[in-house]
Image 1 (cartoon, one colour):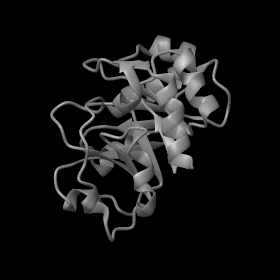
Image 2 (cartoon, rainbow, N blue to C red):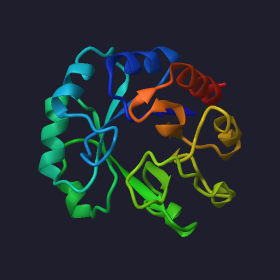
Image 3 (cartoon, rainbow, N blue to C red):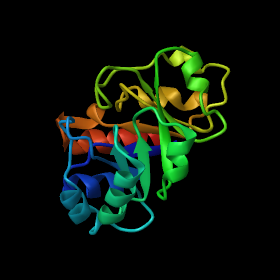
Length: 195
């Protein structure tokens, strides 16, 4: 399974994740999040990172123009849309993007099933709440285009392999505190996901 470590706020945390084998890093541009990063700070971190690692910019309730501008400014390579968007919105984006499904029912996870998407547990806040989705929903479903998020940690990630997810995304499950990664947990999470 491919791995994304989200809520990166420092160069050190980014490099620990990359050296442990992370495929992607997430940078949160949602001001109400405790993991919020200014575009300037994200740019400083991203400018120092090695190639071949996806730099994912997380957005909530912004315009396509804002997304393109911030991704261009910071060097982010993929936009993660953590809010409801329609096809017209997506057509306006110049930046490659992935939709997030905040699933409340089993039926929700089938939305956009012809494209890669991130499936997270629904909660009032946007992302990083550590709430776990009902894993039984994914039985007998093609999960090859799903990146699973929500309530994951080094202890439970290995149990997901049988579902065939494309990838997993973690934030709070590998933290010491909001925005500060526990390097041991980051290494364990990635090792267990890829073992």
